[in-house]
Amino acid sequence: MSSEASLAIGGKSLEMSIKDGSIGPSVLDISKLYAQTGMFTYDPGFTSTASCESKITYIDGDEGILLYRGYPIEQLAEHGDFLETCYLLLYGELPTPSQREDFNYNVTHHTMVHEQMMRFFQGFRRDAHPMSVMVASVGALSAFYHDSTDISDPTQRMIASMRMIAKIPTLAAMAYKYSVGQPFVYPQNNLDYSANFLRMCFAVPCEDYQVNPVLARALDRIFILHADHEQNASTSTVRLAGSSGANPFACIAAGVACLWGPAHGGANEAALKMLQEIGTPDRIPHYIARAKDKNDPFRLMGFGHRVYKNYDPRAKIMQKTTHEVLKELGVKDDPLLDVAMELERIALHDSYFIEKKLYPNIDFYSGITLKAMGFPTSMFTVLFALARTVGWIAQWKEMIEDPSQRIGRPRQLYTGEAKRDYIPVAKR
Image (cartoon, rainbow, N blue to C red; front, side):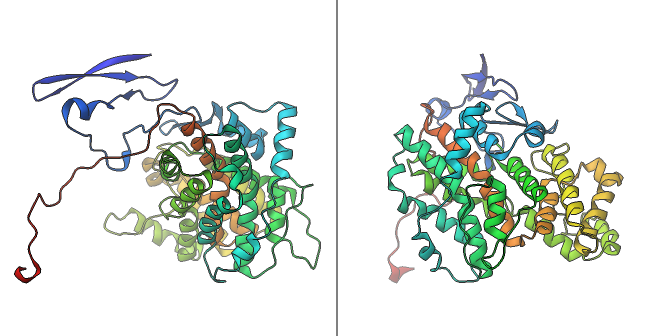
């Protein structure tokens, strides 16, 4: 359903259609604005611009709602698992039992990477950040799997999608093992997705490793919560790269690179560093006072969200998961976690936080949880990239199959010098 709107410019009236989605805000179609008026719109950060039409993820920030293909994130995280969520995002529906079994089998049996990737890793410095290794290794997949880079072939697109969902956890575990100087651990087909990843990260050849089911379930839930989040910076990067016809591995590598930014995927690492700066619970009042001081540049990381003006629905699930993990591990004397729990208690009861709607967000809880599970802060964004891969792939696939999409080409408001003549160097 669509209606019309009028825009008056210089005495002329321009008719534009208003397009309605199934839910959420309507959009004003300005695709012919430049052709009819010679003018562009100005929208830094594209915060009021819909760059595409999508059926994958819906967010209502005011009400604290997040839906994957119409299903509330709370229900998926509570009752489903990550691979089921992957299937949903890719195909649009929850799998039947037979579809689920086939999908899980295909992912599980493609987790190994080409053996020459082992030598590829040896080219990195030992102290390389795991995210720099991920950017390079994900992009390098296109050098190993030439048979799935033709984006015009639906079969190759799906093969590439399955390969990345299956192999990026292996690359992520390899990045971690390389950073700590331990041998790579091959995937094991009798384990589920998250348990397999934990084993690849924390097992060593000299002893048996038993996956803790509570930790595996917690990690699986973290992956579900991070699987997609509409047209965020990294997803928009994947779509923009894909609009040029770049191969899928290169597009996902571009998404990994964008996610590395501290304003995007690095928020949980920043939240943990803030807790380390605070140090002990008795110092919390001082830092809260600083956060309330408009003249102090200090900001509490892990609180509030750009999109969610209410409680982040993912944070509610993550809060429960965090406490389950801490209970399972018997964590009682970690000063960092003591600071986090006290800060959480204050934030949920302090009138300043409540009025400003500065609730603890998913980054606050996920950082605490991942640290308790044994992951260093340098791996936090890697795990985010691992989880978000399926969202990027689903969005990329949707864009490729959308006949209305064309190569991305944002415009600008030019404020530089007007035309001027070249001056010979002797006269400058």
